[in-house]
Length: 467
Ligand SMILES: [Fe+2]
Image 1 (cartoon, rainbow, N blue to C red):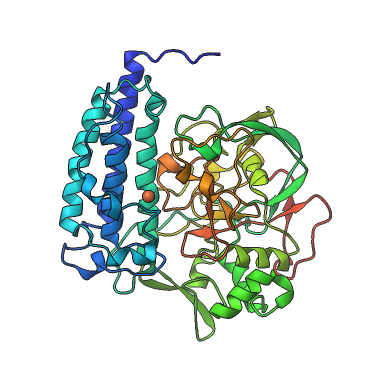
Image 2 (image 1 turned 120 degrees about the horizontal axis):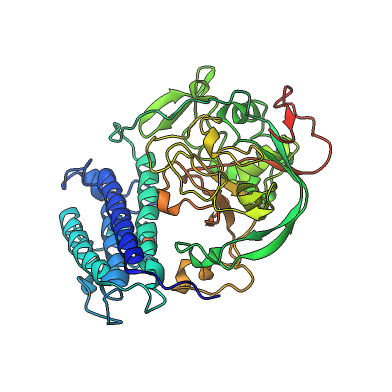
């Protein structure tokens, strides 16, 4: 079946939406860079961690990517036109310049990077205004504009993670997240009867290559935690000696935590008899945010917790099944709550708050079976590697995902409080090395159907089939 030809009104609405998304992404970039650092502030150009880029590299890299796709390749009636700054391409290619070496490059200074970004944006908006969207595959449905929005939003989240690693007085501020309105959610489980559903998507215009194509997959019965594992639950694992019990860890996980001397999540610190965490320069007692999802744990830590709780991590197929399948109608939907785009009532996104919200804070975003906060708050580790779906086709370039297939990665699903709404999809596939925890990562546990495990962590654990 051929998609209907877009009307002039459809195209005008698409242009308006993409222009608004480009503006929102740029506003977030500025909020993390030019709005908080003067041009000569060393924090703007310093490398805060070898895992991260200096902020001014990200700012110019965002501009360079937009230059490459929207200025040079997004012009109407021409496949290739001159870029704004082709002379700096070699400095901002992420593949030829690993993060650790970026500070040594002769980079544009913060003011030059901003001017570059502004000039590129001006041209990109001219092309958006003139573009037909349906003549070339990259431009169909405005795809490449949407890809660039998502690229900038991904770098915004990375820059937010850099802020988390930055030492010194706080420079970012936001309202506290909403409180829970569903008490007693932590530790409860939801039974998911097995079924066949459509994994991935072939119809979402913004979807990236590794989310495609949609294909039927059969999922067996399983139980899934109704909410991400909380700080209180994780603290019980830590205090029960979880980081000292070799039997809970994989060989690689044990080797890593032993070598690094890890005894708790990143930013946690024992002060007297209480755990504290540091959140964007603000130290707070963990028991004061006890019902928030635990944050900044790596895959190995998540898997060790699951073993301690007598469970396992979900596969990414189980995760997406829980997030999209509606058992009542037998259909696969866009989001846990239905097909409507996320609103502030559904999920904690867009850095509106600088931390995850307590579990049970977003009942409007729950799935029909009662699984909460699958979108927003924290990325969730899944026990799956990165592979292409059957029928995968790299588009528009192999380096987005194909070159990573089969590597030592574990999948992360959902999204975090730092993810922009245009990137928050239940089909979105994120991945990272199993040792990484500077990302906004948490997890929830799963188990195959069967008797509930005895778990010392939650003797009062209640189990609900249809909570
Ligand atoms: Fe990038």
